[in-house]
Image (cartoon, rainbow, N blue to C red; front, side):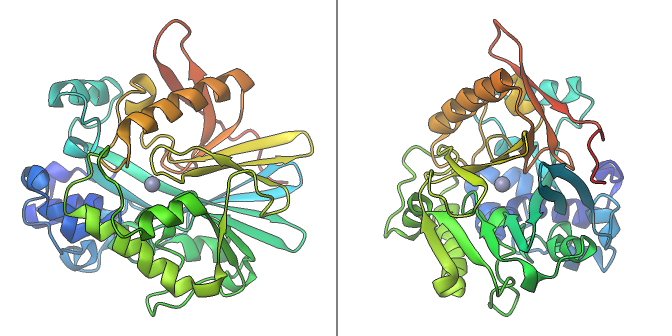
Length: 360
Ligand SMILES: [Zn+2]
């Protein structure tokens, strides 16, 4: 949110920006009403960013307004495009690092030249094209974030692909900022020609009669709202929704990898082609500072915070060891980079990739 100094904004607009944070999981009202979030999200409930901003989305979206933000690169034979769905300012507390104090989180952010009280969160969906195949990995927020999200379709068109041309969608997990773009506002599938792959474990968790949040710090109110969001999307997809397991060969050329932790059926995706590779990590981390320098720090949206941290560390070690190129859904746009490990320390660094491999 480089262009927006929230301290200078009118109160109503600041509240709207905070509401954007709450909306990311597809349940703005519920999160805003959670007792332990009251102080940061006071009065933000049910308030759409659009409403409060009175039709000036550039201020809410870091200045990119109606522009599509697209970054093209290659993964061997795959033509790859990162499609920025949006950019939201999340309140740092109590969303991030529930294990730490306000002072520790503020200091970690300030040390990296970031505001101490909020976290700019990007949403980087990926389009992979090869021959007549057009595969999306995650779909952004849809209309669930107001002006701070929902740019995916504009990005897709800017990349020269229509929604009807998408023939497969892989979903890393069923949070609103990843599945929100699957349906149009009228409830019908946005990608009518696409089969949508999600792990069976993920689907079964969110559609079970009583999802187990006993290991989660998710605010009480969201424990009903988040499953309702997922169920609505699954229903709207109907037979287009395909349940898979990690290791299944659902999409030719893509490996589905079990990275459960943040959610019970979270999957990452590895694309390997022509000696090149990309690891699409999804939500193994939600911020390029907090969860790298302090990998045990989690986020309230984890369904199992301890498992999320363990999975993060396991894969960070592996990605560092393999020197794997990574795409992070919530890393700063375009979200490409590497994970560096500081040997001997329980600490990592996100190293953004310079523009070294543009598509020809
Ligand atoms: Zn996410």
